[in-house]
Length: 316
Image (tube, rainbow, N blue to C red):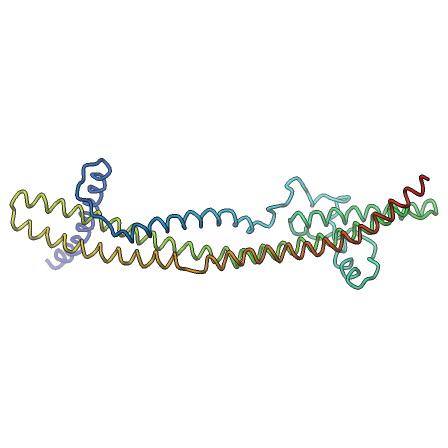
């Protein structure tokens, strides 16, 4: 007998939930097909907040979908490149660290070398760096062959081009590293923040679903009360009226909760701060890239003027 009472007590809430859900679905169907009247009007403040949160949700989704590109290191990497089979089937190290150190100290960069090494970062700037280093290696090997076989020095232009390619390789390796720093900063300071903000939006949306369910349940109970009143069943009327009052309280509570959560979402300063951090990361990357390229361009400008003058003199 005790077991039967326990089973009955456990089944009763489930039956109530099924009845509740069925009533809400029935009310939703009546509203959809235009068969419902006296639909409970939600507060104007609530409806305005809904529109504002929906707009913010759309903006959030659109920006995050695009900015997630920064999570992919190879977003600007040429897909047709195969760095694993380059420069006589050897992977380049192109001694960039020693070149960069020599450039910093104002010394002469050591000869370019090829050696086995892991494939470097997959960015366009790093690919340009590796290509320039490979070209410098080829020019260095060509010049050495001329000197060894003919007792001649390599052409001045070949030497200058090889040196400039070394500088180009060093600069673009630095630019590529700056881009990776930018990407990491954007992921950490923007995407992490905006993903957390997206979770807040979802909480507000979940609260709105609760409001919708509470409103549907209330209107379904009101329809039942209306039918009971028409039938004149006093006992039934009193029972359903209690259910209506409870449903009204539930709707008020759910609406207040949703309003609070939607306001929290709309007033949260973190998305604006995250966007500012994204711009800061972009600015820092472009500043470093511009400074490196400006110095390289200045060095190249002098060489360009020199070789053009020498070329005109040789043709005079």
